[in-house]
Length: 293
Ligand SMILES: [Cu+2]
View 1 (cartoon, protein in one colour):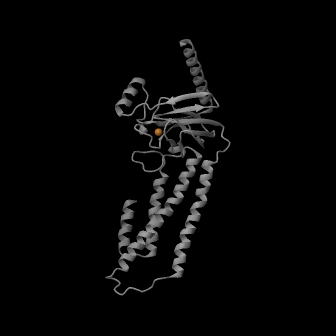
View 2 (cartoon, rainbow, N blue to C red):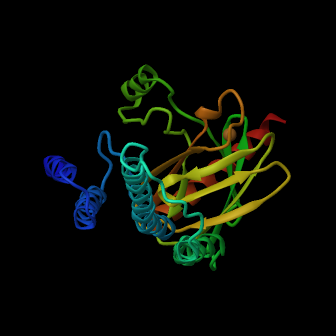
View 3 (cartoon, rainbow, N blue to C red):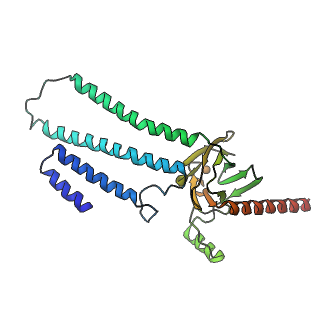
């Protein structure tokens, strides 16, 4: 593909005309879409993480719709500027025209950008509405940002727990792996991930206990600030089982980079087992507390 682009550039250098520019653009977008078609995370990958929720699928689709428009505009402006700089330089155009106004051109360069914005705004507003209008959510999780860890509450199930990062350096992760036999993702794995059932609409209420934090999971397409004294909400529905990661996305102090979010999406029955286990552990803790008193 790169060789193709190189020959195209060489060909273009021989003289610029509309046909050649269009040919170049067609090849460029062909290359671009083939990059997008290769799904799955790979080393040095440069695109979004694979979408895990309907919201993120729509975000990716919107990105793929808007990006070619942005690139086409940028290329058009650059080509136009280069053409003007060469064609109308003092050397190539010793006797400049005295024209100051052109009504037709002025209308065109106002109307076309307005039309482009209108075309972009329709799917943009649709997406905004989709991601912010909570549908009939089936369960709620409250995410509370603290300096520097997350606390989670499941009000429907009576579960409360804190979630802390497990390992920040490769050495720490390796030591942990040696101890437990499990693999850990540096800076992202936590001791207590959020567990959610797949294919269920889940409401996330975000708030904070000290400073502003932000609950963000890229593959879910959600990012919502946790503001002390306020509750804001959004929703997600995970399509497939798996572990998804996010991070606090509002600079919240010294260890801002060390309060990751891990979400484990499991089947309904596995989720119910987890809920029972959590409840049993909580009642045991209470018994111990009582005994201590
Ligand atoms: Cu934070």
